[in-house]
Length: 609
Image (cartoon, rainbow, N blue to C red; front, side, top):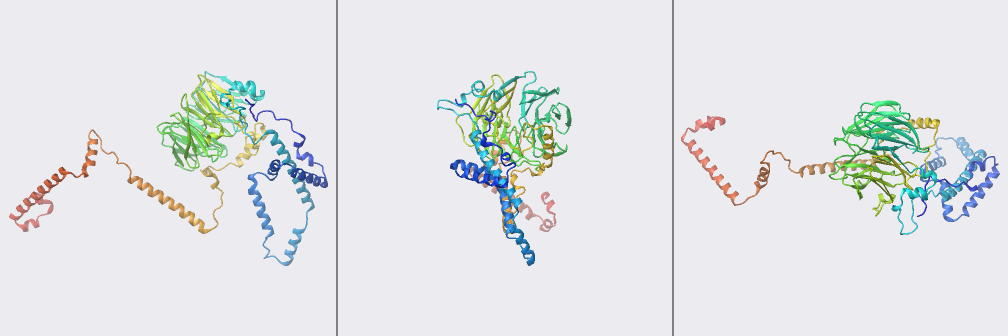
């Protein structure tokens, strides 16, 4: 078995090629910078084709900069075709002269920056070859006879992992306050342990030291971090309480009663809760105001997860359905019947927001495509129903069922795989929660006997996005305060949560005909939907109105009422004869009396004559 590649391993020392660009251009004259730029361009063009393409891709940037480049092109085009109709001849001559005039200081600055970009591109290409940033670091076998499924945590710890990574494999026996639920903050630095009997603690994952620990002396159903590791929300017996990292109570949310599941939306600073009453509530943690609350009308619910792509909250109900909610809508956005006849026990979504994984009481794990709301495929579990599922940053699917945990490769979301990537067994310990640690190849498991931490190679994202708030695991107090201020300034409105986040901020069609056609299409879709609903109401089964022992007989009698046979024909003939005889008798009685009196008699009194 080949050694696993983990981003937590110590990187080799940087070579001379990867020297910082600022050191090479610092104190150099303009002529020296021009010579460096010329030599770098020659060096890049002399590289092989694949290496040259890598360097040029780093130099020109990724696809994220296409919008800014297009904006600069538009500005240049506007400068070239500037409207000078309102200018005089002197103003046009002055403008042309200003455009032709060269700015030596600006040219030197642009040459210096281009040289730095070339140097950084070469250094990034060298680092990519050393660190293998294009690979996910999964375990690969050397021969066809070997299987990654046979690799145990003990073998990884003894033979394949370095000491800094192997220390993440451990077990904590906490029988007195079990079962436990486990959560990580956004940076992966701190882990939150919540025991059902009232034990709450925070552990620093870098030093494996206990940061804080306290006991609430009542049942704890769920717990989660808020915007960072300094604040957390704990769902206790009756209410939800907010604590700091020292265990000091900050706030009590009286409106959130008997909460069973919580989820924090970091870009909107919203805490979403669901509980025994089946009422979904959104609480703004920055202002303390209740944003919205919706009645799901589907009974108690404890399965809640957010879609990291659009911040839509997914709820798993006991009738086997999954509903999608946003704060601005009083009704669910989408409703899916995922597990017919069995409750939904767990939910998870990948980072792209394309796939949703559901676990049900029928011992099945189903993968759904959220773009079409259709089932892709499903997997069966053994040893019990799946109690928890989670998807790592790189797409590895983790499933906890019974006393077993199974992990599937990222391709298992798109294609049905024959066998899992890895597995881990906890003998006699029922799995309650399973979460992947961000930016590390670590998975935390909460079970009925405490906490377990294992290493799953390739599960963590190796590249840290410094533009994301609270994702730096090494930030100090000053950086944390600055990140809080920036995050509050960039906080998104709850009304922006929708199924398609790209629709907000898009430009409407400038052509009036296209706008009218789009509005016409929307109206036609609404009319077609109404027609379908009316047809469904017409074809709806007959409502059972009768009660008692004879309702089945009455229903059969109504069904046979329109059947015409010989007996029915004879019965009709007899009824017609009786009707004719009665009419003849009435005519005979009326002929004997006075016709004028009959005409004067009111119709309501004729039955007495």
